Length: 90
Image (tube, rainbow, N blue to C red):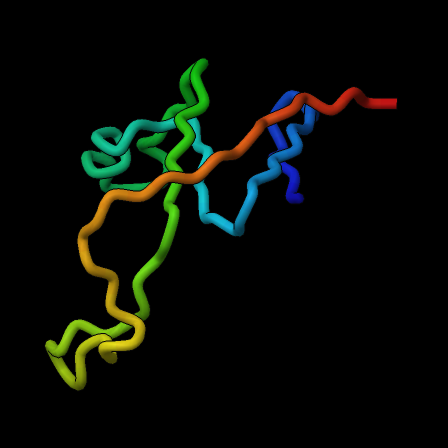
């Protein structure tokens, strides 16, 4: 279980059946792509949650070997479950 800290100091617990990666941020992908500097980003009222069931290993074969076969992710359907639960401050 991990904790997601919000600017308001509230915390959210996240729990899943198996490990997964996630990012929670106040900007859309478009806003991040358009920003030339960190100061261009203005936090919005919504938290965008992006989840990844799996992350591929490093390597692009641009300047060296690509991802080794045992670490390569192939496109395939996937299912996973997670729960976000608000935690009360004491």
